[in-house]
Length: 147
Image 1 (tube, one colour):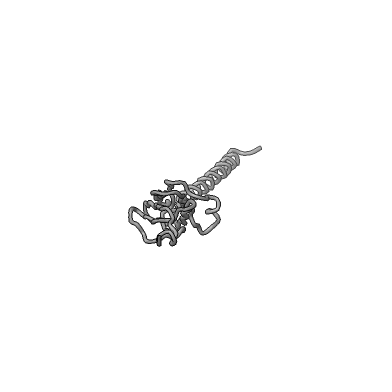
Image 2 (cartoon, rainbow, N blue to C red):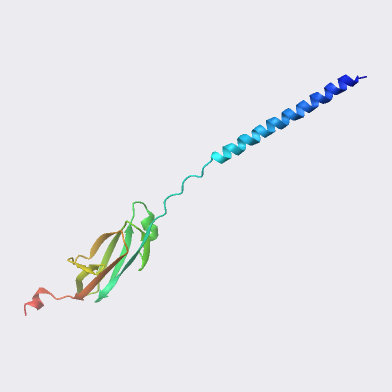
């Protein structure tokens, strides 16, 4: 039979075992909490600034279409834009003016300023809110002007 002293020793050893377990548990929880505080979420990508692009025909018979020129295949997925369009600032957009039969391009206009070009295709970098317009006039052949 165990003496009172042996019983006290057994009880004390058991308490030391429990206390050691609690200390190790608290140490582990503290390490976990500290490591969680140091975890930082990865930085969010910067927000893409958007600008508005409006385009269309000022006068005459024809159409104006616009398609973004992107580095990847996303342009194929986007297709042609519909005016007004909200696009990322700095996007390059290709415009195509298609005139009806017996009509020709009279002018292109960007933000109210006429540019001297009668080419059917133009490309602009849209770095601000922008309005692109085209106008058509009836085609006059050189022969009819000489009469």
